[in-house]
Image (cartoon, rainbow, N blue to C red; front, side):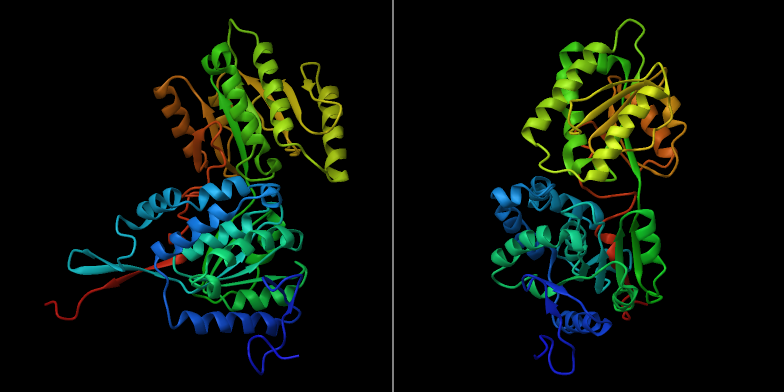
Length: 433
């Protein structure tokens, strides 16, 4: 059978549809990369053109099958012009499509790095699309390794891109491929063909990809495994008029991405109130969890996760007389109650540890570089500013209001999302004295 990339190249067998190619040999990867480079040498897509396509794409991501994919509701918001234009203006300035801007006697221009390889994590259904979108906004071409467990979801989402991109603005800028993560030969073939890489995932996966031999000029952006926590001062959680609203915000943050994202809160620290009991707040949080579970029920759960949740419930309550837990008969969700400023080992699966502390600075002072996002509910602005400064000094990259822990914006993990895959070129005109 002839090759889709012309004579002399091996055939890349499609898996299920022609949107995601199942690579068999390193030559398959190199052929796809060569084809992308040939396209890239003849054209450059402006950011406004990309945003036009993205906005149509986001609007098309509707229907029962797509709505069932975790994170698609968020993806629709991310792909909107109102989300992307402010992001690009912050990273590149007010003029999106101007290649050059004057800086003194010189001109500065943002240009793509070229071909960007993407290694998304396997536990977030929309991540292959999210990481790809960042590089496309920078004018790059993309080769994306879709984790084998996300092929069906990615196909469904990218099918809508193909439908709305009738002019082919982005269609020829992307190659999606899938192969087993243990195929080191295919991983290496992909690494050696790119000018930049965006790597996401757990410690083992990130280490594996970073050990590959990339070109020495390649830009590498790593988004490794991190944790996120939430915190409320005494005035916020003790305000009975606001307890229901704050509880719904917390539940929303816990439910999105099934608590598997780096931005998912695993622990909620509550500052102790000398005159208020915690029970009314716990009841409000329980109701919010029940309501969220009805609105977004879990249709299946991996047996290993179910066992881990049940074991965590039992071990938590046996660990200390101060420990309690609130949960249904099923493993749908769990609230673990206790005291202390140390972050318990995360269980995920919508399992939230709620810990009382005397002062929110106690847990923050123990943060290390593994804390990505801190979700806050603090009544006093100056107090919040002090807590935010302390958290930022301890390695936290995102400090947001509870309910917005998953708002995907730039910077992310302390770095620009689009600009990290661009080059800032300096031109000093030769006519200058």
